[in-house]
Length: 177
Ligand SMILES: [Zn+2]
Ligand SMILES: [Zn+2]
Image 1 (spheres, rainbow, N blue to C red):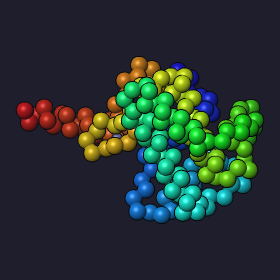
Image 2: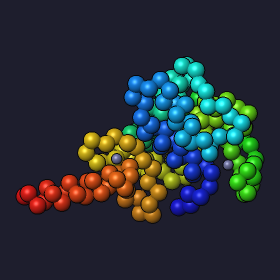
Image 3: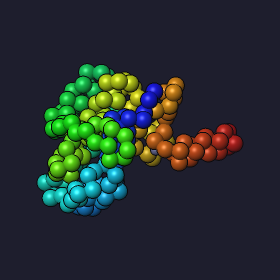
Image 4: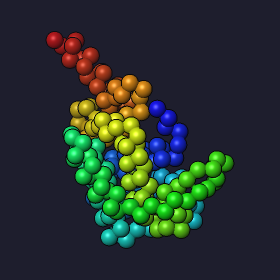
């Protein structure tokens, strides 16, 4: 599987958004954008109104809903709800040295860039590689979603941290038994 393209990388932005810790922080979305600044045009302002922050949360919920879906019909329905929020305007650029396409124009608002990039990136990977590539971490106490980029699609955890935590827990359980 080739995950080197912008579109395939954009799915990581979608996954990060779905896993973003919103807690009670009204500025979580602005903080998320700041932490993922490389996805946006350098001139983009990371300021969001309360309504825009709520829309970012809606996008995050839809990404999670796609990852949680257990049947293809559900995946399609949820992907289409997500895509309805996107307004793709393909844009050619070589800002990193290689000519490639972005899904949103650099002058679009940051929310527009985020929503469109996330929706298109997630949809492209699901359409190309299958929705079974999306999953929810099986580590105890973790509800993060992930995209499985492993060759044999054997991933079960959102991160190495959760994988090793679970290995240690399983080992301890065996020792006790
Ligand atoms: Zn780029
Ligand atoms: Zn996890």
